[in-house]
Image 1 (cartoon, rainbow, N blue to C red):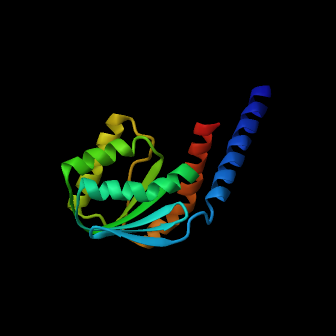
Image 2: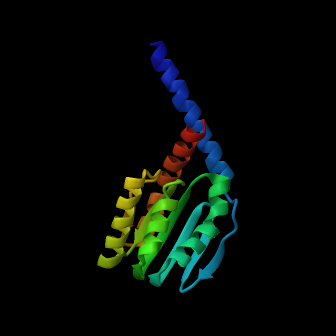
Length: 168
């Protein structure tokens, strides 16, 4: 019985820490759109709304990483919602860089309208990340922005809890 009470207290403490992370993340970043190469990102709090147009290279991924690093530094996690309906291939150097970098951070990807080529590349990067021991969920594939928006509240809570556990 004492163990059950202790477990409930630990769970309540972690939930409280997750709520603190969510509050800290709320309205921390103004919505700003930045273009890099043929791509763009709109940062809205701890969510990056990314549009990929055409092929992406390592330098594109490095620029994306530089743009989202302040969010990760402040909040501890990030949700990247990526519209890849117009995406081309990601070069090999870009795939390796992305997989290695995202093993060191807590990032959840949601991909909108991923065709066969982008879905294959994304799945490859996921598998590379797994081999490298990443701390993130598998990528989620959806058909619309509305579907992505429906997932965000539960993902925020889950990621905040994960960060709270890691920092507790």
